[in-house]
View 1: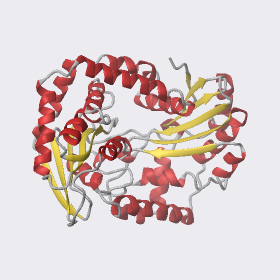
View 2: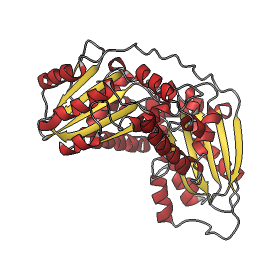
View 3: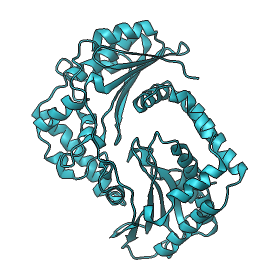
View 4: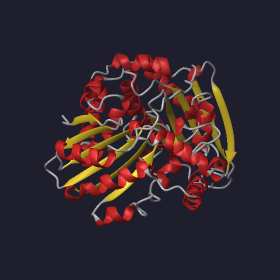
Length: 438
């Protein structure tokens, strides 16, 4: 049980306090309810651009990192399609430094052509390195665009097109900031060797006078039901043919979310998973294979992706995947297999809670979903999943009309090993794509 208290400032800033006297450290986490889904289709990548701009200094503080480092702290940030999160950890006795830094960039971020140009170049190079020049780098650009036709999940956090960042204007950036980076659109979570009274005083001192700003009301077109299968083929200079299949699933707050979580673990949770054991180890059709889902707030996708063994056709590999899914749709999984997944999930959640940083971030995430206390009840939701739930969900999700498929063909000719060693394949199975950050 993670204990916490919550209060709201007059300007709408939600504040969560988690006291932990066993550590000399404190974490200050500021989560903004803005992600790539809140961008204009013609100006994508702005939420991620701000992840960089927010470290470029504010009107009163030229450098964010230097004062924090002087106080013995460290920081980082991340952006998803649903949110943007900034967090730092430092000795609890120096916690006011973090309040000072975070409040100043919330109310008076420094905007100028020079800082925009610097960060624009940084993000543009990241786009080129990770998504244009890297083998398979454009996969999720293509998959998202294939699976989504209406919802802004159709573009990645980095942006839909490089030109959107390259051509970003200072006024566009300012407008985005003042629309989203306001107290009423943020959650401040403080965890560690602190008291509620101390945090209340510091929150009022440093954030209380920041104008609430106009409350952002999200109006996003929801993706209609997919009623026909979609298919795309590309041919590029990549080492191996690769297969990608995506199916639409429910939202993060849908009770089916926990069933989908268990299904992805059964199919792709490491070297003991069904897909690895059958398609990599036994049939030797894939050199690596994974199953994951986006975990997004709005309805997301569940995806199976794998690199083929040279000489295996994409059609043969796809049929083998479908055969494994048919087993999930027709047969109840063994009780021992389900209990193994539940035990693994319980261990994972307990392990995550060891870290003070993770606890703070989780509280912020659950508050963004509507209730920070979901952190304390989530395990019950996993434990409630039954074998019948799994079979029924597989029947709903794994249907042809709900599927988008990408054949990624290799144009490289030559002599290559037929298959990786078992240890190499197992290692890749554990370290493949993480959909949650794409």
